[in-house]
Length: 590
Image: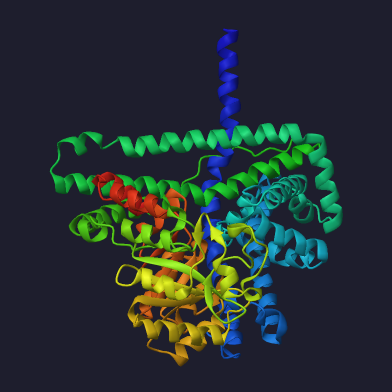
């Protein structure tokens, strides 16, 4: 008898723990719809103002190759201010509103989503101080990079570009400093986890709230860690169970139906599963903020404050949304089945471009690497050129030859004869002319104008050398400096050009070049579509990990620049052997 009572009490305790969160879902959905709609209107006004400001300077976009403009003109400074305002708005709508929502539910106060949004907007002014700005920047920029803590939806995919992490990973000192920085900033974020709660729920000054948060976390970090582990493990278990159910229900039909029906069911099942995971993603941060808010009040020695189980309520609009969603899945699955081979092409046609001549296939920026890449079937080879003291063009990526040839000297301080005496993994440092001859009729050469000598003279000389070789149609001049590419495109319109950028704002697709090279993070489907609409091509640099290569091989990219050419071709072979199910899963999650 006692055993049954204990079990009954445990079930009731579990119910009282889980039900309040489940019952909050309709309110969270309403909050997400309303807040995102209002935020969208505000951001439309802000982005329009930012574009007008940018256009007033005669620019169509500002990018990583033109960033000094932001700090040297009043328009640039105004753009920075508007970008900060955007971050503040996101913090207000993505986080502050939900914290206020959670606090009011815990205290069982009567409120509406509109009231929470109004209060969160009014509270923005509390962050207009040095400490408040630091909090917003940490949430918006550092938290997503660290992969720890709460962040805003605008920047939750932010990460350190691959070309920077590759330098960090290969330099022991940088790697050690990077690890130390990650640990330090993670601990700072952990210590100040409750800072927003103090500011919003108790009207504490920013500095006082930071101190209060550190004190709470110091006393309760073990309990906080335990609760977080339980929360995330529970979420993972629910998602796995949900995925198994959604993917397992129609297995019978998949085994007995015709190919057309089988594809239809596959599309429907995978879309349902992906929609469920996306749906869960919408609620992930709000539900987590609810849990953190509950812990905050518990640590403030208010243990009696817990979410109350509400009486059963009907939510017809929620049922209606589910019905419309299912109908949409059926229609899209039917249309997808009709155009299956167009949506999921059987052949992978994305060209492979070897980074620094041959990537990992041979010595960096050397003829041997280029020849190996060409033999593997690479479409192109990217090389870096710099000018010597006596006016010749040789290949080198870094500012000096220290890393590749063990000589701490810059190309511009050496003669061609001195450079020719160097060896990179046993290979001589080649000239531009030698690389042109090695690539002739074998592989397209993407020539990056690099280093301190990358100027208009380099562009003029490179065009001249390419013309003398008669290889204008087999070369593309590329650079991280937009002004240099713009000059080349205007002066030599017959020469193909490419601008490499890892960050940009504005109408990037309208920049004056033939190719736009996007760093992995900025190479989104919408960015590629915009560039293609302008009649330009997209290069993605530098996807080296298998998952990243796979992602962009299946994208609309016109080429990927990578260090691992053999790996990329191996992935292409695997991708072309995929089953229909694998194609659909890759297509949905890509």
